[in-house]
Length: 132
Image (tube, rainbow, N blue to C red):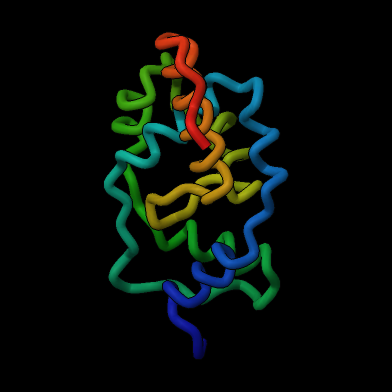
């Protein structure tokens, strides 16, 4: 394998799709998991496995297989009452649609969307429109 883990991950980050934001629009549990993900310690394994293939799906799966994080900590930080199976069912769409990255970061379009939501909340509370 000629490319490193970071280079492969960078390829995915450079080809982000803004449409994934729609998966969070009416998904409060997903939003909580995304917010918690940004506060997680995620590590790359020291000894990397080999990818099963060179396709995009193979490389994405390989990146995740070589990343570790505490599922228990993610559940606690999200504030959700989930079993391991429940967490897995909620994480799969976030991972599969490349909202969460295996280095502990989040899709940049999703980050911007969440920041805008927060700003709108502050505007609603203060009654002041955002300056542009």
